[in-house]
Image (tube, rainbow, N blue to C red; front, top):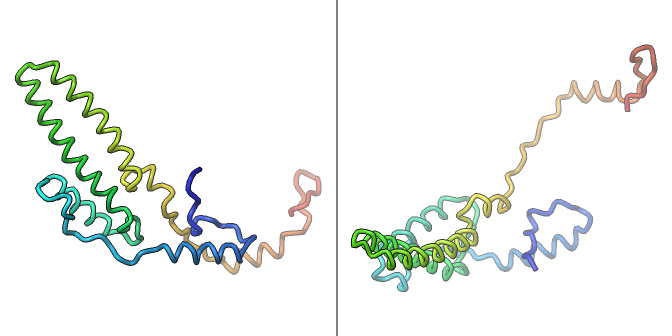
Length: 172
């Protein structure tokens, strides 16, 4: 079953009490603590994974809203280690090609494809793809100023009969 939409995305005002309860329950799960720029101990010795961690945390911290929380730390660690692993596989594939070891090249290439598919799934979970970010935070629509002259004209002509091509037609 798919996850429920956040209350901020629901625009119906039919059930205000339910909406208030839902907002309270979502607020109780919201963390104020952010992830540290310092890579966790699990990434010790993995230079590419550490630089990936720092880059992503810096990117997330630039956002106004909170997209990633300490609950997502394990997924982010897995993603960073996956990036390290992909880098090693690319290097190994290049070496296999240079040594004309085509059997090794094909095996590494297959593993690289599977790891890439897994990383794509993690990217979507971490809101790193355009499609995954599309429904996260809708931008607020600017309220248009209603011109007093338009209001006056709307009131004056809204229910009067309009003559079009010799026929009377209602305008409202």
